Image (cartoon, rainbow, N blue to C red):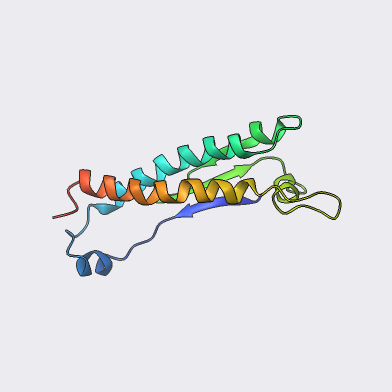
Length: 123
């Protein structure tokens, strides 16, 4: 299975350097990942090309752990989305995963900022 993943890792020393309160940020980051996964799943479904609709229906999110998330397609063996994303010798690429990442990336940054602020991590 091929995945589109979000995995956020920060060390406590990073937050100390920024003058943020210790601890308490993991839940905020996890909530930001949840929001991002939701947006990424919906965006990728919209961006995926329509032929039979099987690819769009197969896209789902998965949360393997705290501050982690994956968007994947259950269409595999071979992973069909890779042919669409990168093209083949007989088909031009349709980089729907790249378009999704470009649309969702800035949202992740905004969600992280909002959640850290709402949780009181910022002093």
